[in-house]
Image (cartoon, rainbow, N blue to C red; front, side, top):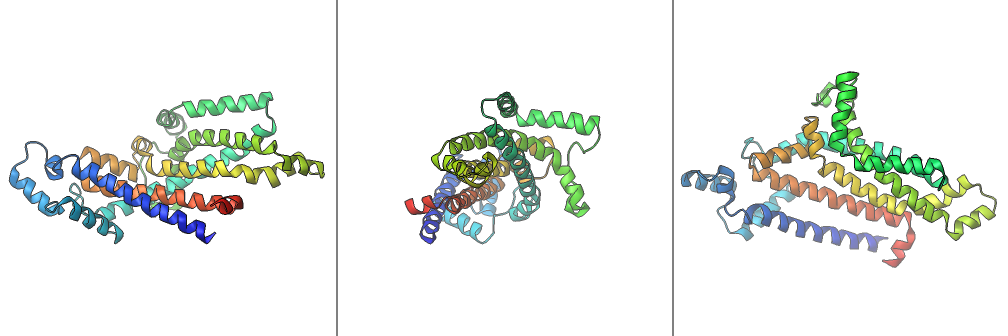
Amino acid sequence: MLHYCLIRLASLILSLIVASVAIFIVIEIIPGDPAAFMLGLNAAPEAVAALKDQLGLTGNPVSRYFAWTGGLLVGNFGTSYTYRVPVSELVMARVSVSVPLALYALLLSTAIAFPVGLFAAARRGRPADFGIMGLTQLGIAVPNFWFAMLLVLVFSIGLKWFSAGGFPGWDAGIIQGLKALTLPAVALALPQGAILSRVMRSALIEALSEDYVRTARAKGLSQRQATVRHALRNALIPVLTIIGLQFSFLLAGAIIIENVFYLPGLGRLIFQGITQRDLVVVESVVMLLVFAVITVNFVVDIAYAAVDPRLRIRR
């Protein structure tokens, strides 16, 4: 197990290095002069030179890359050109919204997918199975931002149960914070729950056709006992993959939902950084999200080995 973890850790570090080089090239090399890009085409040369000196863009690309990555390692993400505050302060303020939102949505999607997938797999080929698969296909097809606006119309404008947007802050209380995140979390969770339900159903159907399940049934276990005790654990491998990818998507890809509900999260921060040409914010926050995605995938790989010991033996 230790050897397997070390191999996956080495892969994580290599992925982070490659990702950091790619982000640095795309943001600081390809646009040409980042300072001139941030100030616009009509900026005075003196202003461009002053901004380059302020942002530390006067050195060669190699030294700038190592200075940037070295700062990331110690938590120094640079200073925002737009907000005139350290990027780390902006990130800390936005993480307290994005991470709970992603976890909330992931919890909802998992709570939907597991019973739905189990129910559909147990009734394979029956009308209930076809009905559930039709609903999940609809959930995948509907864009989450359209569903978010529908939720606002029904539960905010119509029933007035939730606010249409904004975030009161955790100082207002956990209940108020979770209430403000409920509609965005539901809008994010339903499409992901539909995907996870279909994966759960397919994995369970495949596992239920294996010999060890028939042996368990022959020994006297009921269909439910054989499913829960034997088939479910073996079906978790692809499900864990989707859950890990979903958390990464919910954390890094909720830009549209955060803008629909005016949530001060990381996705909205990236959107504002792009529109305001604040490359310092975009570069650092994108790298932070890449780190989060790669780390989640690393944790999922370790979870694979914990669930299925055969993976450890193969590696």
